[in-house]
Image (cartoon, rainbow, N blue to C red; front, side, top):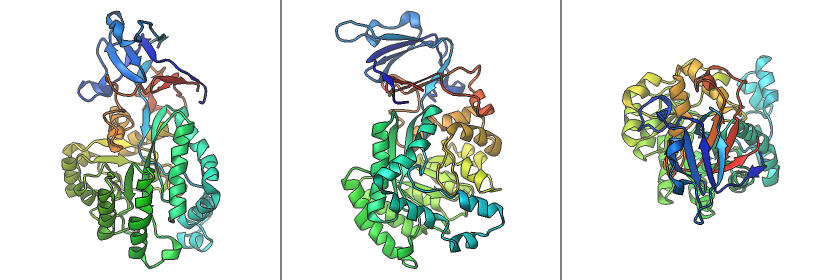
Amino acid sequence: MTNETHDDNILIVNARIATFDPGIGAPYGVADHADAIAVRAGRIAWIGTASQVPDAAWADSSGQHGRVIDAEGAWVMPGLIDCHTHLVYAGSRATEFEMRLNGASYEDIARAGGGIVSTVRATRQAGEDGLIAQSLPRLRALLREGVTTVEIKSGYGLDRDTELAILRAARALGASLPVTVRTTFLGAHALPAEYAGRADDYLDFVCTQVLPEAARLGLADAVDVFHESIGFDAAQSERVYRAAESLGLPVKVHAEQLSLCGAAALGARYRALSADHLEHLDEEGARAMAAAGTVAVLLPGAFYFLRDTRVPPVDLLRRHGVPIAVATDCNPGTSPIASLLLMLNMACTLFRLTPAEALNGVTHAAARALGLQDEAGSLAPGKWADLVFWRVPELAELCYSYGMHKPARILRRGVEHAL
């Protein structure tokens, strides 16, 4: 996907347009009688009927028009957004996967040097160039499915140099491929071996040394914390939020995945962009999220891979009007999956989302989970021209069947990229 055609001005015609603009009200934000989109300088300039396109919508200052793309009846919708990944890491845990299926316990694997410790070790040893090389195939897999924006977390370094290297690698990936990368600092992901039994000391290190440096270097767009019974408790998580707040960075939270510990409600107190996982979410947490505008990010890949049986309370989220996003959680331990299309199918079959909800979850709601709702996630004048063309009879096909679809075209900020 490195070959690209540069067109400052484009007119797309003969399209079926799914805007995912909630203001339209129709399923998928389908714009009645609209069959054309004009693009200027990488942004959407106009949406409407081709016979009525304003001349200024796709002409440059000298009056020259750009290229016309005939969509040939394809659906045109926003580029997909994967709003929760741990995509930059080194090594593989396939051997542990095999050990588990052969009867090994978590303790057996840990004694053999496995678990997150093995990923941290491999990631620390890889170096920035090694991290980029190992992460490129995962990111390319997402792009081939129409992803134009992806969030990438740190959290597998758990020391100063490697955490910063992960974030730099994520920025480098965004500079080398046609994708918008948003970075999230997740230093409070786990306790490294060198801080065993000293969680508060580790958080002192994270909040006073590593996070400020990441912010100073412009490497972090948000800050996350693993607030969980096996992670960091409420008081510790709040220290991270306060540190982020002091640096002007928004927060996110891994919440209520394994137990109910009030993580979603606490994150909402700090106006968290999103609370993610949520299998054990209760009504108090849902109510707090709704009041704060916090997006619920559902991660069916982790639910599937861990063979979980407790489904996130989707009806509770619906009842309180909490926006629902869907993401891959691409990571080596609990969701080694780089397919957002597969997540659409899983979100519908495992969590009972409707196709419209699932697709909204990888467009409009996913943009909100990254604070990008004014730029991406729906089609409207002024937003980035991140467009994906699908030759399917109905958009529900993207959720219904898996392994059978690939985009006919992808434009990121008005630039078409070869598939």
